[in-house]
Structures are given as structure tokens and as C-alpha cells.
Image (cartoon, rainbow, N blue to C red):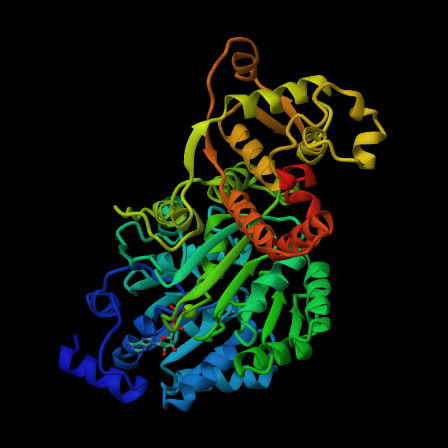
Length: 554
Ligand code: ADP
Ligand code: MG
């Protein structure tokens, strides 16, 4: 086993670093001690060196399983440039190219061999003729149906340990909760693997969640104070990536779409442009980002709700790798929840996916420190609230929400539980639109009884009522709001409801009233109208969602 001196000089000579990052050294030690290892280090934390450095000092070949065929060549080129003998085998090569590599393997001229899991079976013969010193499985979460990016070809990898029982295995991934970690070890037949868990806390990332209405306008506002910062907008569908890229181009940004349906050549151009700072914004599906090493991504927006917390955390983790403050923004909409539930229902492991989606939704709905929720999801507990998420920055105070609850519940009762959140709010606020008029809701006793509360605050209040079990969404009936067994207690038994008070719009209102007081315009009503438009623009929402003219006049 090499000594520390040797290990450190290899780190310097081949990788140019003087010190190890957290966990790297203990992982490398464990590899040299023939232990199996499961490494969980966030993206950018330096997982590669944990197998690349041992590969240089071990006598035989290190096999690296990697799902990213597209990036294999880049990785190998990078290693070759550092004087490390590496090669890859995948389906993109000709037979003679592959023969060439087999020969080099036999001649002991290769230290690291990258292989896609699909190509592994072709290598059986060659493996019986060479010494395999280490098996590295990158993006190991792909093996688990509990993980967020399951790949069937990965499930065959368990046979490696059976076939090479003496060769240590190192499985690496950026994100895996406890269940996934266990599953990875079970499936890879490495029950005694040492689990190396790095801290997941990325303090420099601010966390924010907003309701997903008027998202484009909100994004344009969000970008106003970051005119040159580069960032990624993650979307659920390919179509959305293109639509947003186009809208942002119209605003003068260099924005490009990126998804698996775009041809390979164009895709790598977008990726290169982003890395070289000539493309400022990439609007992408989750196909974008794996393996991209760019340290100055200043923000990440999720246009749609991600399907689970692992994916979300990995994606926001692409911001601020240089440690500088960076922003993340997640749009939360129930339409997305429904869409994702449909996807989950179509997949083989429906129950798992629905449970994960539920956790994601709880995170987005949370009224307590978001970072605490995120970290506890990965098994890490922090004592203090983080101070760098929207909830910490604007903590709710709880008020007696009984009247608010009664208004909402009685409205749902009067419309016989036949409408989704949006229409219920329209009725409460006395909106004059088709959703209301077509069904004669303007004649209900409930019409306009919640006019003093802004549209967006109503949305939040109703979400709170849902979270507290006073209402539920019938996802299979066009998201109609339904009463629950608890609703009765509020409506008929005088049960008190405690609710987090929302201040955002009160603050806006204060500012507005202050400005109106100062203003010298004689036409007060016109002034009010303009101001409301201004405020709505500021908040990135339609003017009618701010508050009614009547409220403003007060
Ligand atoms: P991961 O696979 O965990 O996402 P990588 O292995 O790709 O991370 O490493 C991310 C970046 O960190 C790379 O640019 C790498 O060169 C750098 N890095 C890794 N280890 C160290 C170290 N000990 N000191 C400084 N930089 C390092
Ligand atoms: Mg990596």
C-alpha cells in the first residue's frame, strides 16, 4: 500500500493539487485497504479523484462504469492531457478502435478504462486476461429504483462483485437518501461497504419558492438585477424549454434551449457556449447538467416542480460551485403536481415515485426553514434555521385564521365542491370573469366575501388549509377542492384554525399608500390604477391579484 507521501505527490503531479478536499483522503485510504465504498459527495465535490488517484498507484486496471457516453470522450481526453493512461469503450466506436484498446489493455498500457454499462458484456473475455485492481461505479444512484434516475442497464452491475470478489468496489453519487444508499449496496453486493457521506449543506445557495403564476414575467423580473449572470432554467417539457428560450431571446438575453430531442451537434454547441460564457441562459430539461463543470453558474430556476428532492438538490447544486452567493428559485404550481402524478402512475414504481413527489410538495409548501427540510431529507440535521431561504428571511407569524378558513370552506360547500383553487379564489374575491359568470357564481352568498385578501395570499392560505387537512385536492377530478372530515369541525363546531399570516402584500400596500400620500396628482383614482400596475409588475403577477381598488382607496 502506498504511503501518504506517495499519495500526496501523485495528487500534485497528476492533478496539480496540494491538499485533499473533505473525505477524499479517507476514501482513497479505504480503497487501498481493499474495502468496498459508497461515496456520497455533492456534485463538484471532487468524486473523480477518489478512484482516479488510486488507479494510478494500483498495479492493474481500474474499470470505471459511467452512464454518460456523451461525456466519456471528454473525460478521457482530460485524463490523457494530464498524462494519465485512460481509454473508453462504448457503442460509438468502430470495431478496429475497440481492438486497439483491447491490445493496449493486454500490453498494460491503460490504467483507467471507462465503459458504459451496456457495453460491459462484450468485455468478459478481456477481463479474464487482465488484472482488475478497482471497480468504480459513477452515478451509482442509477442502479436503484429508489434513486431519481433509474437505468435498467445498471441493474446488471451486481454480477461484477460476484465475478471479481477480491477487487474493491467504489460506488459514487451526488445524491442518495438512506433508502437509496441501502439499495445501492444491496444491488452491488457490497453489504459491508463503508459509507462516506459529505455534508450536503451549500450555505451559499439561497432558496426561494414562489407560486407558479405568470412565471415568464416573474423570471424577467428576477433577471433584472442580474443582467449578466449566467444560469439554468429547468423545465419539465421540451416544448417549454424552447418557448422560454424564445421569450428570453426577445428580451435580449442569449438564451438557448437544451433537451434530448435536439441534435447532438447543436446540443454540444449550447453546452460549450454555456461553459465559455457566450450563452448566458440555458433553458433545459433534466438532460442538461450532468457532468458539466462550470463554477460560476449564479442562479438556477425550476420552472416546474421537480419530481423529487434528489433531482431538485442536484440541479440547484449546479449553482455557485465557486462558493459565491447564488440564487435558486422554484415555481410551485398544482398543475405541475398533477402532471407529475400522472407520470408517476405510468411508471413501474408508482408508489415510490408518489411518495417522493409528496416530499417535494411538502418542501415547496413549507412554512419553516427550507434548508432544514432539504438536509434532513438526506439525513443531516442542523440546529439553527439557515437565514438564507425565503421562509427564514420572511418568517410567518401565526394568526387566528378561523374566519379565513370559514370563508374558504363555506364557499367550497356552496359550489358543491365542483371547482379548483383558482375559481374558488375568484369567487371569494368577487372576480368578474367567465369562470365565475358562466356558472352564475356571482349570485352566491360567498361572492366577494374575501375581497380584502389578495389573490396570491388566498392561494397561500388555501394551501395551508390543505396542508392542515381542512381541504383536499381531488387530483383525479380536475383538481377540484373537496371538503374533508375536519372541515365540519370548522364550519359547525366552532373549531379554531391557526394560520401563518402573509405579509408580502401588506408590505406592498404600505409602500403604495405611503407613495400615494406623497403624490401631488389630483386624479387619485388614476394614480391608484397606475400604481397598482406598477406593483403588479414588480411582483410579476396580474394586477387584479394585488388587491382591489376598494382596498387601495381605504
Ligand atoms: P464530482 O464528480 O464530485 O462532481 P469532480 O470530480 O468532477 O466532482 O471535481 C469537481 C472539480 O473539483 C474538478 O474541477 C476537480 O478538478 C476539482 N477538484 C477535485 N479535487 C480537488 C482538490 N483536492 N483540490 C482542488 N480541486 C479539486
Ligand atoms: Mg462526477
